[in-house]
Image 1: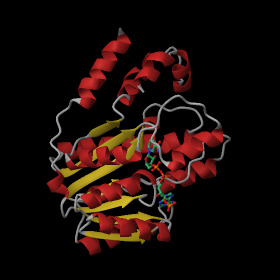
Image 2: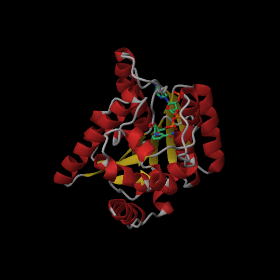
Image 3: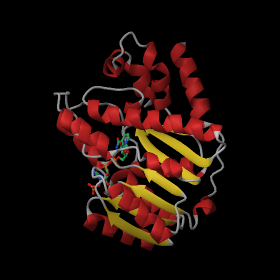
Image 4: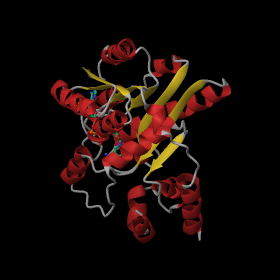
Length: 281
Ligand code: NDP
């Protein structure tokens, strides 16, 4: 019964909530997407391009960024520029934002999507790696100083329901959720024009995620959702200034039911009551 009720609540809350996405609202919009050389970020760049936005993309690999920019221009971007940068350094995040503000004359959307390489493994106490990863996704708090525009945060189910093999990764996503979740409230209290959209994703079929799963030997029946569709959903969530996205919507059920399990372990939850989850997912 609990499962059916939570499924119904999740479906209504996430799938049927009203959203009035107008693709025209993105024509000429000034957008910065981080981690856009591959995966979901790359797909977001292509969608923004199709909508006629002005885009700056960033990641570390310059050559790959160059190719993505060329494709964005061919897809219809009003402007497409790149700047290579390493988000784990002190200076590059500032450099990237300054470049975008200068080249685009402001920013309407800042999409924080990047993540450093995150191999899946048991926690072996490598605190340096955990520190480094935290630094990579450093929450860019100074961005809260903007007076309008939209912050779009790409987060993960693992930031809401921690699982095994992902301690540093889960920590970064929990940090993002905590920081920007709090910021959402403060901005609302101030009647601010800045919107914050936190996008919680399930497993997505990017090369990085698929390789990580294979390497650790995780046998999962959970299907991976397409990166291009995930990217489009994130963009729509930002454009309609919604506070949250759950993609695919079914993962919302996991966030609702995570504390109802006899064990706190998500891994065990999936093993002990696999059927309803697996049917849905
Ligand atoms: P990818 O590994 O495909 O892409 C990560 C991007 O981040 C790349 O563009 C990479 O480019 C860039 N990057 C890596 N390290 C740095 C760094 N130090 N500084 C700047 N950029 C860096 O990831 P996904 O597309 O799979 O994931 C995108 C987002 O979606 C992430 O936030 C991830 O946590 C989230 N997510 C993904 C899920 C999935 O199953 N794929 C599930 C849930 C959430 P480069 O190497 O050129 O620097």
